[in-house]
Image 1 (cartoon, rainbow, N blue to C red):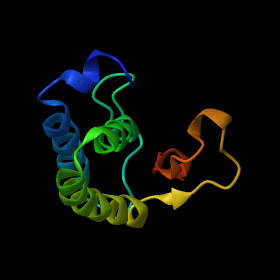
Image 2: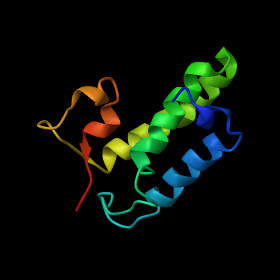
Image 3: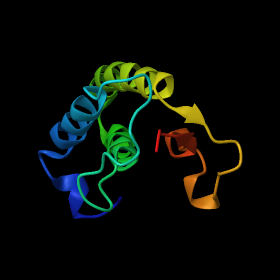
Image 4: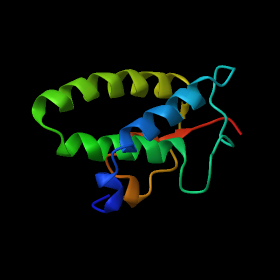
Length: 102
């Protein structure tokens, strides 16, 4: 994500807002069809947060990391593992290896 998106002041707000909207979905599992636009899936928001954390100073990284840890726990709780789907481009990004309800 070393592009213009990293410089957007609202990038973290947008990512957190997407999680907030998705987590308001009723039911145990998240709905896979809950996408704002192609390329803006909840997994993309998690990618954005991961990239931002790499560039923050230590204190801010720790603060945002605490929030992201809570988001990760909820996302993991409301999705299922997908053991058969782990393409190379998702290496290290476990959130792309989860299944949402169809």
